[in-house]
Amino acid sequence: RMQGEIAKNIRLVISDGRVTSITADEHVEAVEAELASGGDSARQFREFCLGFHPGLLWNPGDQIIPYFGYGAGVVRMSLGDNEELGGAVRGGYSRWLFFPDATVEVGDKLLVRDGRLL
Image (cartoon, rainbow, N blue to C red):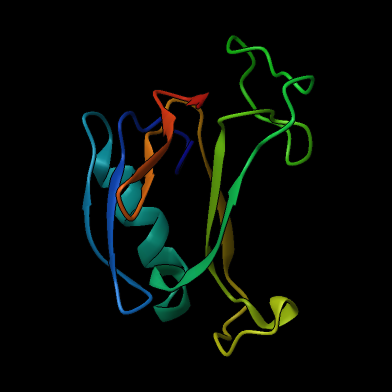
């Protein structure tokens, strides 16, 4: 959810710790507007989290995915100020993005396919 809209199938390209490209099937303009509102730090990579606990589930019909307890296979990626995490990005802006249907590859290993932990 960005700028009051639900963006669908967001794809972010991150190079050297910075978002360099954004596409989405729906409401890409809301994603661009949200990041523009956060200044330079809004395009900086903050953190990547992958849920592993199979017992923590969220209801796909809910409007909000909880910060804690989103369960196995759900990706939470954050952009912005990472000072509290020991990083060098400042600016005050931070935003959590949840990807419940993500596919995650690390090197040549597939970890998550369509939101399912493998």
